[in-house]
Amino acid sequence: MRPSRRGFTLIELLVGGAVGSVVLLGISLTFISQARQYQTHASRRAIQSNARQAMSFMSRHIRSAGYGVDPDRTVLAYDSFNAAEGTSQTGYPDAVVVHSRDLLFRRDVTSATSNRLVVNAPIPLLQRGQILLVLCRNNGSITTTQHHAFVTVGQHLENSMEINLDTTDPAAAPNSPTGMPGRLFHEQALLDGNNCYDTAQVVKVSRSAFYVAAFDEPGNATTRTPYLMMHQGLDLDRDGTIGPNDAVPVAEGIEQLQVAYILNSMGTAMPRVLGVNEPTTAEHYGEQWQTMIPPQMVGPTRRIPQWYTLPLNDLEKPAREEDSPVNIRQLRITLVSRSSTQDPQHVGDDLMLANAGEAIGATVPWRQLENLSVTGVTPDTSDFTPQGRGFYRVILREAITPKNIQLNSQFIATTEAGG
Image 1: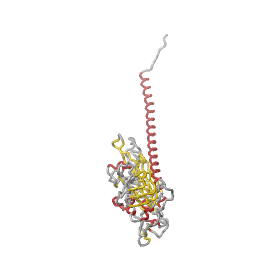
Image 2: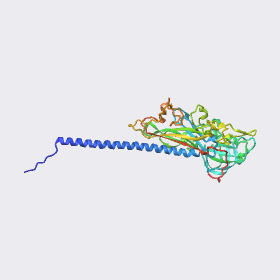
Image 3: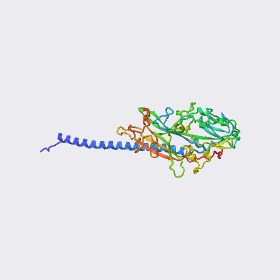
Image 4: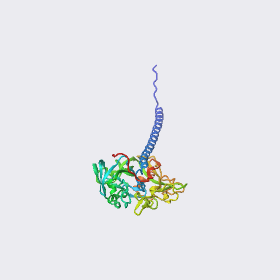
């Protein structure tokens, strides 16, 4: 008797197929969910890494700020700086510029005029826009009011003993993080009529300007990518001009940079937090941040800036509580880093939430984004608005102490000739 051969019925096939589809669908959904979670975590790790990289880089420069540089030239902050236009505009990130003396470079000066320095040994390289500090070795004539001068190199040079200086009038020098050094570094007129500069020493001053700018990405016509940029005030591309094209990127995805000053206080008073958007904006913007203590007269004609003479604990000197660069205790930096791409499944993190009872735009000790306000901003500012648009974001804040800012006097370098 032939055995019967029974197969699957149509109903069994349909049931088996349905069960298999459900299993495959579950596996697929699990895979998709895990992949999305992986991408989310990867994006958050990346933005945290970018923020830490940017903060670490800025911190190294800020901590060294003030070494061998007058306090009023140590830190210059710019509120709401639109890098594309070079102007202040609501909703844009802040910018900050710090200066410090180069530890390894010095030359002896054999001749000095307002347009040229001659030194005792060839200099391998100097870029146009390099800041130099010329230091007298003696007190000079009795009528001299200052015995050191900050000047700017006006021409690229290699293996030369002659340094051509930029002769721009200080009043016409730019006040911008993306331009050449400004009026505080155009004191070339002091070199004329004072023979002490003919036997002086010249050292370099390093400039680091940090700001945020957005750039178009290939294949993405709708969203630009923001970068933290650094500008040294030098004509790096040697095109004859010093501008935004001479900047270099530091970190990708840095959407916001906010700056605040934490000032010295007297006695047991709490340190004050001073936003760079205070009402007297003309006195707090960039190189105008100079509500300095009036200089002290020494004799009938000579002056010494009082930041050299006032002790920090002198309770009889109210100038120690003024809004002055010499009173900066810390520089508080706040960075916002965002993901490189938008997640269509994510609304986007919102970092513009105000504290209870505080309006956005106030500068208070606990407000995470300092004085940033997006009220009334133009559409272009959306590149820097830390709200929505499908981006993951992280905020990082650090209060950095520039310990060298309390300079008591200028000094001649003791290192051997070099650089």
